[in-house]
Image (cartoon, rainbow over all chains, first blue to last red; front, top):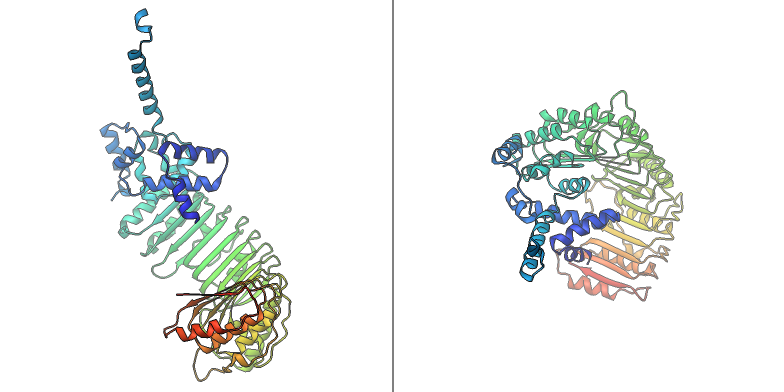
Length: 79
Length: 428
């Protein structure tokens, strides 16, 4: 069925996933864009910022003071 | 120096390795380098608090959430005050355009609701969904009615009272009001001031008894509640009209009035493609033991969903009238309702088997009975259905009976069918 096809379709390495997102965006294929963006969102969900950085290789370019400042600004969104 | 430019194998591989490393460091954080509208799309798929948390990932992400086009707020595990702060902060700090604002909560926020609506209306969102289920209805403030670009509005548990100066929602295509109270005039005006309306759902309401629905572009109408509708919607394709309470027995003059009302209503629905109706409404069409002539031929009607009490002869006959007037019916879904066995009810007991009604459902291909309990009247109806539909391919029966089903199944399987291809599928 379609759901399991979709689930299998996005079981690719990260680079391919981003290639798919950009291709879907450029070619204006809404269904594919929805599926791939949702996949990325699901990878962000339920993960701490540190875990998210690890999954996506995001370089933390904040100084410890800056990071603490941002965290404090948005304290209301954290547990 | 010249020596260093000589490409000997070790230097070559070191060069390659350095190149590979540098490209992997530069290109491996592809998430951050996505175009902003895609980042916004991805963040929009998270609950707001999760999106805000991405602000600590890196400097590129610090403000990314403030531009996300859709805002989803769920009070789930939040304490009431924490959720209030969350909503306040999001509505003040978000600075991009808000395409969609969707808030749902199970705790009461009546003290904050007014200021939230004010802050929200300043963002001019295109789509608003508010499902705050707890406590008395939320009075929708006038600022919400001034959001000119609104395209989709879905409100639950609220009180709708139009402001004196209401310009209308010129671009509203979908309106859904659930569990609300208002007045005939307010809802009527709301609908007529939304000329682009394509989908209207009014379910479970108070204070509305007679409604004129004037909507030239309306394609879908769902109404669940006890209201008389005067319908002017020439482009309507799908209509669902259900009562959520059993209609109390009526005296004769009221019954007569109801009969002409239902006839007029059906007349205004003659072009629709899909129709869902409760038998309690249909029964006014039947004069007890004969089929009445319906005011219209439902030439385009392909799908019928019928909530019907088979023990009520009038409902059964009225349903037959409907079938007779829907020559192109392709799909029929039936939901048997409990009979209301009060002694004061003027219920003519039916023996469906005994009726020889001439119904031809030449194009009926699929049918289903949802919530089949194995009663004789239900089996009799299935028998009739199988004799009316020469092109039937599938009849699905969803068993919900409490009694032993093998006897009933045997009866069902033994029923003659006029369509050689008909399959009877029973699900549990």
